[in-house]
Image (cartoon, rainbow, N blue to C red):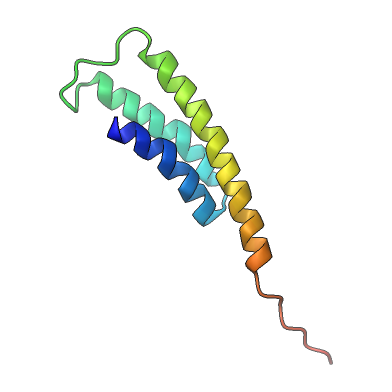
Length: 90
């Protein structure tokens, strides 16, 4: 459960901090790796059960949406706090 909360909260924060669209692509990759690792029993569990793939897919889509919001807010914040470029008049 800690890993789930980390992904759900961490990826939108990362999107806000780097304000790059490639952060949105991290969500499905991270959820796929989490699902595959759980299916292989890397954390001692016996898998996710029958509905595990549907849940992982839903969480990945939700996480992509929240990361998109994080990226948008990060871009807005970066635009508002950017220093204007110095003009050089010839």
